[in-house]
Image 1: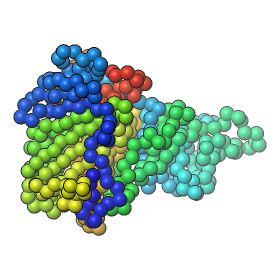
Image 2: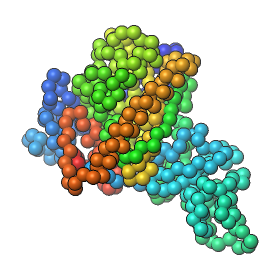
Image 3: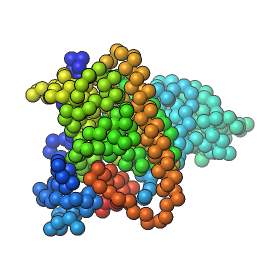
Image 4: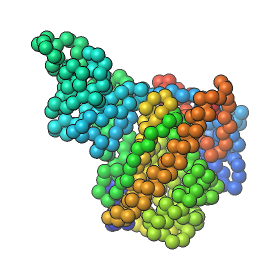
Length: 68
Length: 352
């Protein structure tokens, strides 16, 4: 939630997805070149290639053991 | 690079203030339209071609809420129905030009391109700050001689700011800061977040906010394929955090909005807007932001126009290379492919 400097704005742009949404999430792990992927089912993995990581996430519910 | 237009979608055809008493010609997804506003203020979009001998209605004249073809006088009402033809009383049953569903929302005029029976105005993504009290917006539109997918790629990966927009919005930290990418598959929205702490303030924000020193800079992207891109930008003196109640009185907020509207398969209308919640009455800030942002947009236009030429001459099957910064762009490509193919199942990510 944000409001302006002028004592509050009628419209407050949201930051990020709405609460409760089923999300596929990829976090770039700080200090590394690795990406951490989390499926909306809770499955997690780590990869170095975003293409392979998306393919892993989109394989839900049949996530391979590790990104190809 | 795979290309393809996505039909059965809402697209921004114009800014609301472009549509008025005159006749505005604009092509969206290869369909030539005329846009105008009736006396009661309702925006109208009709096909820009007289049913008789193809004369562009955009080269014709208004007669109240009607358009009179400038060639032979076929006269159309706001529904596209021909209500008069020259020299005879019988109007052929087929004398009609297509009328497009139109919605005016948040200072934007959206048109539905596709099967009109599928048009649902409640699915139009919103940017209410563009027409909300407490915000001031500067805006423009630049023609892009490049496919819309290149602009999507460009906007989903803001690390390019460091290299293409140095001296305006780019600083070294943008490219160096890791991002988090999230996809709401059910809603079909991509989110990319980059939070920079204790970083250099680029001139774009230093001059417009008056901040003299280092900043915390947040970039929170929402992409609603195919047309609407929102960048929620938060700029604050470093260490200034939002209050526990969620208010954020110590920060400056800029809403960077793009409407990415394909004109043809390889040309795009690049609508850009910058809304701010600070210096609302300061015209010099408006002028500076408008000029600076247009400069930034034109830097992108030059780059993307060059990319389109490269793509036009590249061999079939050319394979791009994607790295971490492309995570959001790849997600956007998949959602676009899903819309394009009308698929509901997950599609594989295309790197090419």
